[in-house]
Length: 143
Image 1: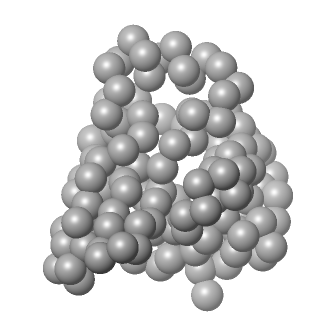
Image 2 (image 1 turned 45 degrees about the vertical axis):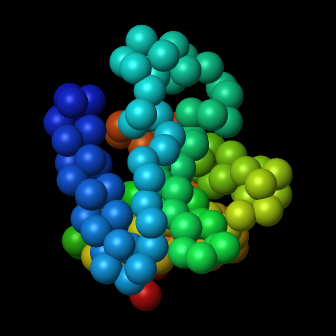
Image 3 (image 1 turned 120 degrees about the horizontal axis):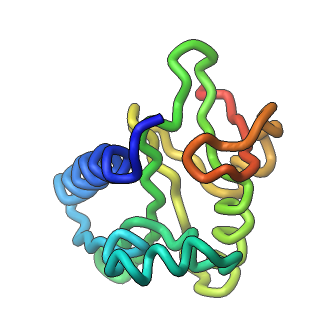
């Protein structure tokens, strides 16, 4: 399994791509979430059950519209054609959407877009825990 730094580098590249795609469509984009936290804070937060562990990666605005984005790099199987989203993230994001009254979108490598509600409604429990975090996950058909 790749190290945290390897996974973070891949994730950072995907975040930059998603941000660039949004900017080309007229959005103003800022990084957000754990990626902007210092390593000791990120590490301590990872050891908790706090929903803050699942803060979305980006926040974007276009006019008066604001959206939250969770970038999902390497979270789509090339063999089964299913997206993977950790169950704890979906639950935290549903709470965040209710609390902030802002929409949240997951953007995958192929630029497919799903909401937490889409994932919860169409996803099926994965057979094991997620390799990166060790948490249960949901599988969603990429179609």
